[in-house]
View (spheres, rainbow, N blue to C red):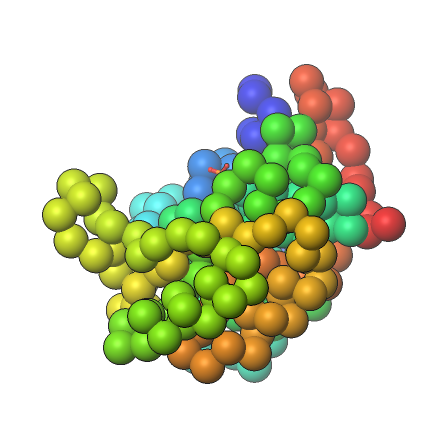
Length: 226
Ligand code: 5RP
């Protein structure tokens, strides 16, 4: 098993009978879906899942997990997902996969949000390795871009894989991929992005993580915010 599989299996052990479990998106989240489906098959675990993306819903259904729509719930028990960056305070950068809105909704609606990752995801600050994805109302993208540039940010609208059109998110919006000055703290950046009209959601997950299960060459560490 690789490090992502190891933490995903560990997270699946936390799931209890009767729980409503949010499924993340990405390769580590996929391993979690597989481990959860295995537990259901082997132990007859009765669980309901809610997916953060269509691709995760398809995978879960193909593995015989029961997938419900989020509109059936006002809260969920557990959400397990990966991340692109994790700071010492467990602020996350997420959203490469363009499913930001549902991912943050599930993270905030969950009693427990557990992040599963390998050591490569640890950073000292958000934006160290990746641009920050900001999902915007299509008609507002130029207004939002100018507002972001006033903070010293640089970047542009995300294009599709062929680079011949604008990328559209699962919620039908555009994405601005921005780099911010390194002196802006994660907390300030989160506050700024929360307040700009036209921003639907952004990839900074601040103060949402319960704990991180991190695997480094097979050794699992449980990390709490410092
Ligand atoms: C998707 C995400 C993923 O969780 C993140 O990109 C990590 O992916 P992986 O587990 O494949 O490394 O935020 O929006």
